[in-house]
Length: 401
Ligand SMILES: NC(=O)c1ccc[n+]([C@@H]2O[C@H](COP(=O)([O-])OP(=O)(O)OC[C@H]3O[C@@H](n4cnc5c(N)ncnc54)[C@H](O)[C@@H]3O)[C@@H](O)[C@H]2O)c1
Ligand SMILES: [Fe+2]
Image (cartoon, rainbow, N blue to C red; front, side, top):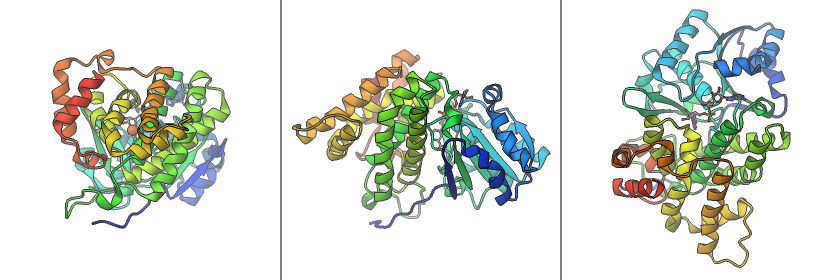
């Protein structure tokens, strides 16, 4: 029985409006005289790269920009980023963007430090030591990649999202500035926001740390549910429940943007230690095969997985209902727990997340193969509070179809 747990995050977290103005000092502390910003064309156009460039160059840092990032980045994009870094010879990489660009910077930092190909590091704990100096600056409120131990890439050959998981992937510094998310279009706000809610809910309802089923000799970044994860997930669920609708409805609502930025980063700290579970395992094959963002796929699947997990986590679901602002007074535990599923379903509808797999172009003959692919992602499925078979996974997909 495992009775110990650990907690990791970025070495330093700077949070708040205009936190990016401190990037010059951050670079100085890291002795980063040459910094490569890893980003994408949309963020260049939105003027966000400029906002990062200025404080860096003001302190004499030489900056180069790699703008070949793409949503749900492929190995090809990673190779292009690594090549750009080898040309420029930076002292630090700065991932600027949503999870996609930050993950690109993370895998590039790995290959720069240890050589080989991004594919070599896919899986749990395959990185042999510290990676290249890394700063992450999120422009969405979603993935928590700025504090997390993951880099998620798309293997275009196998049409599957693959994850590199290692505590070495946690950035040296995370700079979370809600002002950078103001330009996020409503769809990106909604999709990334419900991804963050999924992180918090999957962490809060994960299998207990004491009974985390890790086979002897295997190592894992994920450890199952523990008190620190609970603390962070509770605050995240509450903040996201309060602010996600507002951030989607009015991107200029700065209070909502700040609440979402906080919720997403705290959810990132929670899930990246405790783990994510069946929602994420199912989203990997779905997202790899159809044109659907990671967040939208998770948001679509979340209530169906909650329904499956309800028998194992009634008390926690009742608490989630309360955290999401539901009045559960007078209800018994089961009814209160049901309200969490209803609240998530309503939130999902209100922010325009697709309701069923058919709506995103999935066909019925894909359900079994998706279930089989998801069943192979043991490092995630073992976090689920209820043991889950390939038939269970197919059942969840059928309910979501
Ligand atoms: N590393 C992790 O821990 C982790 C966790 C969850 C998900 N992910 C991965 O992260 C990716 C999703 O990241 P995401 O949801 O943040 O979206 P994203 O990074 O894919 O961005 C989506 C789109 O929004 C644009 N965008 C982002 N911020 C913007 C802004 N402020 N203004 C205007 N446009 C903006 C981007 O240019 C992009 O076109 C997926 O690949 C997912 O699998 C990683
Ligand atoms: Fe996610």
